Length: 185
Image (cartoon, rainbow, N blue to C red; front, side):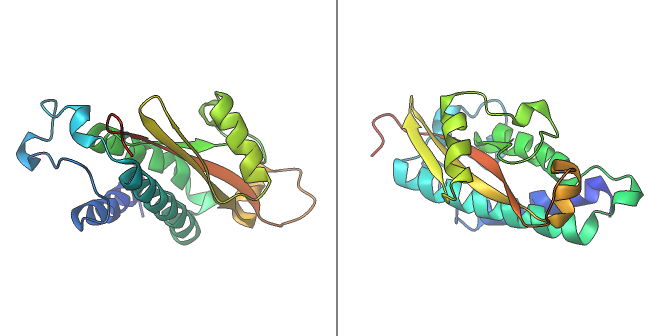
């Protein structure tokens, strides 16, 4: 399976989630005008919507990463790793739905410097995820941020923790950032 096929499959799965209405947005834009004429304000959510959407995205991305990595990625085939392919999906979600997703280093070495904790929220999220918390969240400055765990299984440890002494699962993270409506409750 090529990187393009994996990316297209991921986008199809996510489109299905959005189209089925599982992920609610406050104002559904006209699909014909889904380009520059749609303002980010059209995608602002209530707190309740943001929490539900972030939880679903966290679970979906974690599951997709695990399935694609284990079923389709073969180290000796020279393919881009699934997490890097998913970054393209993240870019499309941000462009089309104004939802930001970003990997976060929790345990192990960063495979990309963009994944290192950048601010106080992210540094606190790393500590919470290390302590076994299932989520770390914040409502600040008109956005909802949620960090959740991503399992690094034995296959992942070869790169993320090359000097490991055991094959026990480790933790990485995924940060989901969603714009909130003004005075969202």
